Image (cartoon, rainbow, N blue to C red; front, side, top):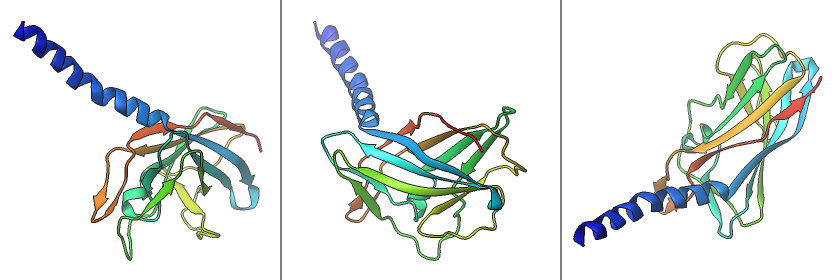
Length: 177
């Protein structure tokens, strides 16, 4: 009888975190909108949008600090099937502390992004500039664009903390020149 009890307890302990993680991942969705090719700078501008579809506020690290900078990535597949991976290029911080943004239930977080093939472009109008992880020479249209938002763990610094972990991928967005 005791063995049966321990087996049931073991199953409950092992499956409960999986269920809550699955529910948590479904509480945040992502999409890309307003993608435009900027021919003069060989760049792409777009909006990366996170939506809270849960009934509770979601707190994530802001993108400007080291906790939040690497949670965002974008992958472009060229028409010739070559892939360009874009990551947030900020790797040195003059000041750095955990700060969060809260996405209320039913609300969205819009993040304007610029994807460039060279690292020499300024951050304008609060946009976040992304550079490829490997050198790329050109975009070949049509493009398929996918964004990933991933928070592998919860962060806490003093009274500031995040409450969402997981990885979500946007649906592919097709872009023609």
